[in-house]
Each structure stands twice: as structure tokens, then as C-alpha cells.
Image (cartoon, rainbow, N blue to C red; front, side, top):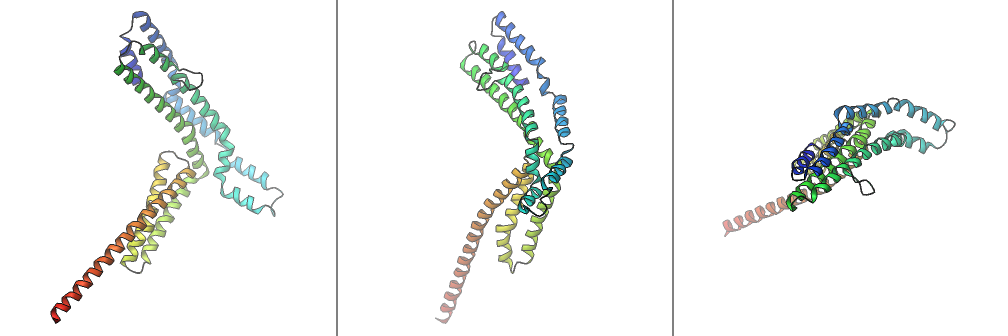
Length: 280
């Protein structure tokens, strides 16, 4: 936003005094409305999200007790489903609040950069005023700056009001320990597989087809967690990444074994030829 506004001020020097005055008035209006994007405002939104989740665990327990009341001996499959998928349940409970936060953020972003419906946006109005006085290269630079600002603002709104919200919900429910345990189990299983392998070739095969894909999948999951992806998205993406890596590993291992077999066959043929030459 700062970079775009500096560029607008620079290009406004090309305008007549009356149009430049309009530019400065709109920039002052923008300055007075930028509080939503301040660090203090961001922290307030995070605090509001945490307040919404303050009683999440007790709310889920209360809903669970109400749900299963009178059904202790029936609908066991449904009970197990809700008991094992509380993250999805909590997501449903908090969806309205998350949507409200995101809608508020989108309204502010639209007010600055516009949308495809009926809001032009303050920055876009300024760019249109300037465009008639700029050469093609300057227009391109200004429009690129506007597009970059829009992309950053929409990304920030998504991260703050969606991704952070989902990750905070997962942490409140305890998915972080689960993520760590999942990673530990995966690495332990890989270590056991290597330990019980029959020979060196078997160890290398298990490394390519099992251990490395597991590490890659876990690494992907952890990376997505740090990028504020929710636990479910990170886990599913990690599984897919591990599966793709396993396919590549299997192909590499087959190529390795084939090359080794060809080499052994070549050595055997050379030994046979050598023995035949000696006899001759």
C-alpha cells in the first residue's frame, strides 16, 4: 500500500493543480481509513478469534452430551464418527463467525481496490484519474502496482480470517500434539522397516519406497502447518505428497535393481569368457 501510494504521488506531479488536489484529497481519505490494516487492528482481530474459541471444548462436550443422550446403545457408527472428527464438528460450529470476520475484511479490501460487482475502490479511482496523463510504460507500472497491492491485501485477509482461524481452532482442540505423534509414528515405522530388512538391497528398497516418502509427506505436512493450513488440509496434502514420492521412489528402485542386475550379468559373462580363454 505504501509503495502504491508513493507511486501515485510521484505521477500526480504530471497533473494540473486541480486534478492533483483531487488526488491528494483521496489519498488523505485512504490514510484515514487504513486503520483496519494496522498492527493494532490485526492483533484485535486475532484476540476476537481467540475469544470466539474460548469455550470451544466445553461447547463441544455439551453438544456431544445432548447428541448422544438416550442413544447410548444405538447409532454407534454415528457416535464414533463425531468422536473421531471433532475438528470437522468444530469447523461447522464456528463457520458463521469465520465467515463474518472474512466478510468484514473483504469489505475493507474492496473499499480500497474494488471488486467485480459494483465497488470501484479508492486506489482504482486514483489510477483511472492518473491514466490519461501517463505514457503506456507508466500506465503499466501503475497498474502492476495496483494488482500487486490487491493480491497482497486479499491474501492477507485470507490468512488472517481463514487460515489463522482454522489453525487456531485446531490448536485449541489439540491437533498440534496429534501432528507430532503422527510424525513420530511415521518415522518410527520407517526405522523398524529398515531394521528388519533382510539385506542391503532390501534396506535400500525400503528406503526409496517407504522411509523417504514418509519423511517427504511429514515434511510437507509440517511446512503447510507453518503456512497456517488447517490440520485436515495439511494431513491430506502430506499423504498425497508421500504417495507421489513413493511412486517415484519405486521407479528409482526398479531402475537401480535393473542396473545392478545388468552389471552382475556383465561381470558373470566376463568371468565365463575369461575362464574359456584360459582353457583355450
